[in-house]
Length: 362
Image 1: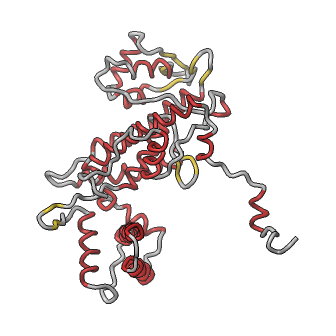
Image 2 (image 1 turned 30 degrees about the vertical axis):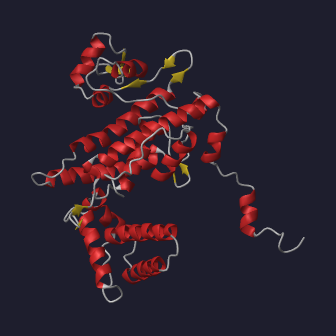
Image 3 (image 1 turned 135 degrees about the horizontal axis):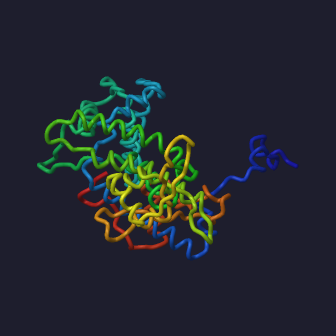
C-alpha cells in the first residue's frame, strides 16, 4: 500500500465512529413526516418574521450586558482584532466580483459586532478617518444612541439575529414539538435554558431602568418565563404517554396558570367543575393531599377555542411514542435563519415571505 493510500491516525480513529446527520435523517422520513416537519418549519418562520418586525429586538444584544459576559471568557486582544479587521478590509478592496464583495462586507460586519461587544477600540493609526468614523457610528447605532441618516433617508436599525435565533430554537422544542439545529446537533432546551435565563435577567434589568418612552420588555420577559413551563408540561405529558390510555402523568396548577395566562384560582375552579381532571396525592402522611392535574385534560382545557387567550402548542413530533424515544425529536435540518429559509424554499417553494424586505435591513 502506498503512503498516499494509508490512513492517517486521526482518520483511523474517526473511521469507526458513526456521526449523526440530522440533514440526512430528513430524507429517511416517510412522506407524512416530511410534510409535518415542513409545516412546522413554516410556522417557525412566521414567528421569525414577527420577531424581525418587533422593535424590542432592535439592537437588543448591545443594550444588554452580554458583552460583559463574553469578556469573562474571551480575551480582549486589541492588536490581533485590529489586524484581522484591517486584513478583511484589504481583501474587500481587492474583491473582483459582487458576490466576493458581499461576502467580505458580511464578514467585516460580523467581526465589527464581536469587537464592539468585547469593547475593543479601533486603531486610529491603522485606519482612515472614514473607517474610524464608520466603526464608531456603527457601535452607537447598534446601541440605539444615534440613528444614521444618508441623504435624508433613515437607515433601519438591525434586529439582534443571535437572540432571535436562540429564542426560535427554544420555541421549536417547547412550543412546536420539534427541534432546529445548533452547531451540527439538535438544539435541546437543556442547553438553551441557561441562555434564556441570562437574557430574561438582562431584560428585567433593562425594564427596571428604562426611561420614559423607551421600549418595554414585559411581553418578552413573560414569553421567556413561559418557555420553562412549556417544557415542564411537554415533558410530563410525553414521559407518561401510553398509546391506549394517553398520558398518565400529572402537572401543577402553577404551570397551567402561567401557560393559560389565568389566575391559579381559575385553574382550581376548572378542576372543581370537572373541566380539568384532578388527582389528589398524599405526599406526607401528616398533611392534606396535594391536587395535581392530568396533562391530557389540562392540554384540552388550555386549547379550548372559547378561551380568551390562545394557547399555542403542537404535540411532540418524535421517532415514536416509545419511552426510549422520549428525547428523540424530529429535526428541521437548519441551524441559521438563512438555512431555515432555504429548507422551506427547497421543499415548498414560493410558500412563505422572507423577513428581509425593504423595511427590514440586516
